[in-house]
Image 1: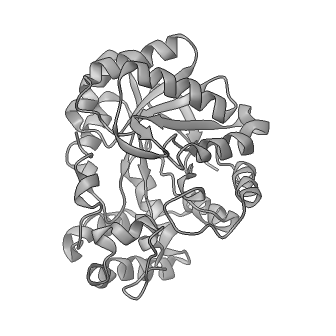
Image 2: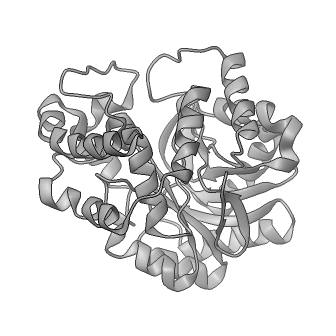
Length: 328
C-alpha cells in the first residue's frame, strides 16, 4: 500500500476504510460483529492505516466496534472520529458544537475507541450557532492536552475552512467527492491546495453506484440510506447509467473494475487526496487497495474529468434536510 500525507504531517495509507456501513445506513449487515472485527483487522494486514468512524454512527456502536477491532494494533493505525451532532434518545436531533459538548464527546470517544488519543477529530457538520473560531480553539486545547492529534472539518465551505485554519491548523477536510459528486472542485479543493490541507473523500464510489452493481431495477429497503437519496430514485438511476457505463468500458479495457477506476481517478487528482471507501468484505478491501497500483494515462484522467459535465448527473446527492447541512 502506498502512503500519503494529510496536512501538517499525518501519514496514512493512500486508501483508507470508512467503517460506518458496518453499523448502519446500508441495510442488514451480511456478517456478524465478529465478522466485522475480522474485516477491520484484515484491512490492517492489507496495509490500510486510516480508519474512519464517528460517535453518531449507531450511535456509538461503530466507535466501539472500531475500538475493539483495532485495539491490538493501535500503534499501527490512524483513527479518525467526529463530533458535532446533538444525540438524544439514541438518535441525532440536530447539531451541537458547543465547546463543552466537544470536550464531552472527546472523552466518550476515547473510552469507546480504547485509546488515549484521537488521531484526527473532525467537526462532522458545521454548527451555525457556534463560531468556527470557538470550535477550532477548543480542538486546539484538546491537542495541547494530548487528547487529540489533528483537527479536521467535514462538508465545510471554503470560508469556514479558512477561518478555522487561522485559529488551529486544519489537517484534513472530509466531504463527499467522486466521479458523480464534484461539488468540492469549485472552491474547496483550491482552498485546501493553498493552505496545505489534506482532503478525504467519503462515498468515493458513489454509495455503490460507481461499482456498476446498482441499476434502475435495484430497490433499497427502509434501513438503507439510498432509499431516501434522490439520486437513487429509479428514474435518476436510469438517467445516470451513461456515466457508469463509460466507467465500466474503461475498466474492461484496463483489466480493472469500475470501482478501481473511480478510486484511481480520485488518487490522480492530487497527492494529498485519500479516499475512504466503505465495505463489509475483505475481498472489497483488497479490490479497493489495488486501485493504488492502477495507472491512468493523462488522456484517461482528462476524459474522466469531463465525464459528469458531458453526460450529466441526475438527482441531488442528499435530500433537502441533509443538503441544508453541507457547504456551510
